[in-house]
Length: 250
Ligand SMILES: *[C@@H]1O[C@H](CO)[C@@H](O)[C@H](O)[C@H]1NC(C)=O
Ligand SMILES: *[C@@H]1O[C@H](CO)[C@@H](O)[C@H](O)[C@H]1NC(C)=O
Ligand SMILES: *[C@@H]1O[C@H](CO)[C@@H](O)[C@H](O)[C@H]1NC(C)=O
Image 1 (tube, helix red, strand yellow):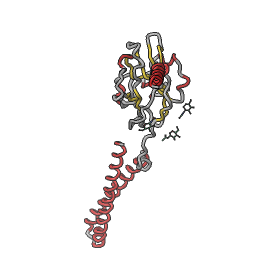
Image 2 (cartoon, protein in one colour; image 1 turned 180 degrees about the vertical axis):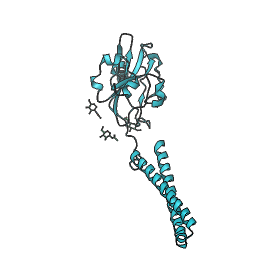
Image 3 (cartoon, protein in one colour; image 1 turned 30 degrees about the vertical axis):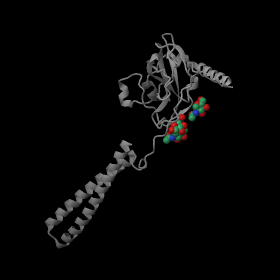
């Protein structure tokens, strides 16, 4: 009985070893990590020990839009495409995170979680590095695979991952109301209010100079409405600035 169990385990282990070759490997998103997929990035499990037979071969991560991954072939993978060419729309895939295969860890320590984050660099920092690991486009679906290149071309490659659907950018509640068109409208409204206040002020000064009782009485009324409208205007303006700020931060 014990022997059977041992044989069974050996069989399972040997199948697992066979399936851990590069060409059988399917890149995977960790299930138990919060933030495994965001609106600009996703996290992958580091492939463990699949590259250690050829430590000096170059390993790239190739990220492709789901809509085009199936038409890509070895000649596409063999010529690294920079992130910038993907972002400007010239290519539907790109290469990033070049390392020699030996840099991928190979460890039996299951307690250490090894992850790789795709899309970790903000676009403004991407100008310095040609093969940038730049942010991905939100609400897009991607596939990813590891590709090994030598100086002839593709040496080996893993399978494609399953579809990886990024999150939609979280809608901000004030978005529609404070969209650029409205902001433009607010600026015009602000200008008109300022002009009206100026006219009112000029009218009041004129009234003071004329010295008429009627107009003086009117003046105190005007002062009141002037103050109210000014208060209203200020509170609105503060409100808006607050919203814009939150929008920028979010
Ligand atoms: C990300 O992790 C959550 C649990 O934290 C899991 O439910 C989800 O399936 C994972 N996403 C993917 C694409 O595997
Ligand atoms: C991903 O691509 C496959 C094959 O081209 C297609 O059948 C599938 O609908 C695509 N998925 C999404 C979410 O676009
Ligand atoms: C996200 O993509 C889906 C289909 O891929 C589309 O129907 C939806 O309108 C998109 N949402 C946004 C906010 O772009």
